[in-house]
Length: 261
Ligand SMILES: C[S@@+](CC[C@H](N)C(=O)[O-])C[C@H]1O[C@@H](n2cnc3c(N)ncnc32)[C@H](O)[C@@H]1O
Image 1 (spheres, rainbow, N blue to C red):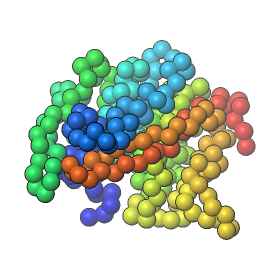
Image 2 (cartoon, protein in one colour; image 1 turned 90 degrees about the horizontal axis):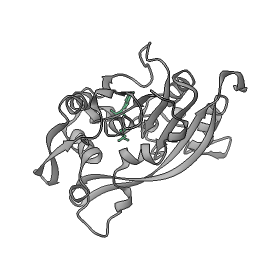
Image 3 (cartoon, helix red, strand yellow; image 1 turned 120 degrees about the vertical axis):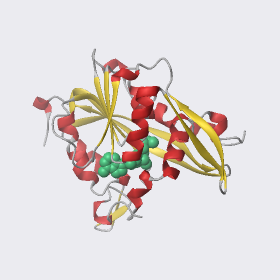
Image 4 (cartoon, rainbow, N blue to C red; image 1 turned 45 degrees about the vertical axis):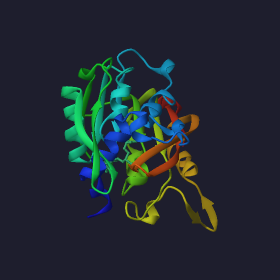
């Protein structure tokens, strides 16, 4: 199984349903755990999106949406939201959530022991605003149009060619719109050959970090509005977690007449 096939597995589905829709007590039963890292898909939107910049009837795009937690959250603020992911299984379940509002699954406790759970889209979110499709972030279909918000949450360090994906942002984000990128900068050769890493490498004997490369790629078209350190917690089983801190950057698209370089 290649690393990217992981996102087609039932284990990944269960982990991401819990990550996106789990109740705090289901994810973290320890009072001493990092509770501030819960609700990451919601916080990618509510801690990063500048609502004052949104226009009426805004469109949003969530690339690498997984099972759709952030996609639904964007629908609180935008009248049309498209979620795209490479995983057919994730999109199948995201579509079920869009159509029915809930999805029953089981999450791992220990060994082969599981607990039943139901992922539920908050009732106040208008699910009719949301659509999901399979697609490749490095070869998005034509005709998507322009968006006021494009979210790439924890995506770029899972791509074979992150630069190709980033190069499409100027055409996807309309003038004054926002591109929200979050990444824990977990560069791994299982997903991305080292020459394609955006950071965590040395060039000419000098360390290069992901933020520096993001600036180099996006500065000609975008202004970096803010950076946020966003902790998140993925539960593998009752006693094993991945606690990470994503670098979130919010980029505002300049008008074409102000594009530099
Ligand atoms: C680390 S997960 C992040 C998911 C979600 N955005 C979040 O923050 O929870 C990476 C996601 O990117 C998706 N993905 C990987 N390669 C992709 C590609 N080439 N095009 C679109 N999605 C991709 C995976 O299927 C997975 O859902």
